[in-house]
Image (tube, rainbow, N blue to C red):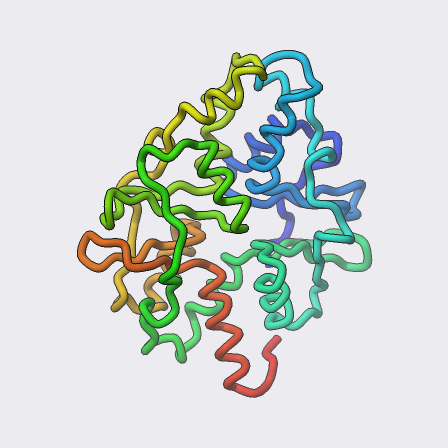
Length: 276
């Protein structure tokens, strides 16, 4: 786990939370009341909240970010935020991540936050397993995936991400991969695109802005023959949640952190006993 994680309070503004996520290249911020975990705010929470926040607050988008506390948009504990303890077996934590699709779990001692376990922490463990050496990305990638084209609007991309509970959308021109757009890209782009904009123009701008304007161009990729260990090392090093998988220039699939976590679950099942 990561000890002494970055945290915010329920009164922290969305603007400050966005700056912290960007500054420290993270996707999750535990929300605390004193030392007690009361929620979690993520890229996804901010992306989902942005359109709704345009009603009920006077001023432009930057004013909205400044005026909105994270307590209003966070995923709340204990109903939806799952926690683990320092004694929780790692494989149980991984299983919880996969089942809930949470990329991080607060680690608590009683009610006190003592750390955070992220998918990056788990991927580091997977990369060290010798059983992974013969595995290839093509065996574990997702083949039936959602994609967008360069002219797809930000509004449509946001809708796709939310509807299918995903964080990554490969951008294609025909079958050729030309980019990748993620929760983080949308979250980073939204304030800069909309700063100074009146809320009545929000939806219009989301419709008018194509993903080509905000996507990561020429993203790092894997092939079907890439060793899983190499893909995982790259994801850890670059803090990527997914790698597009290509066959030549054509998109063949996507390998995500959830796919990697499922590999670890398979290894533990094959071993026949949980490993702490």
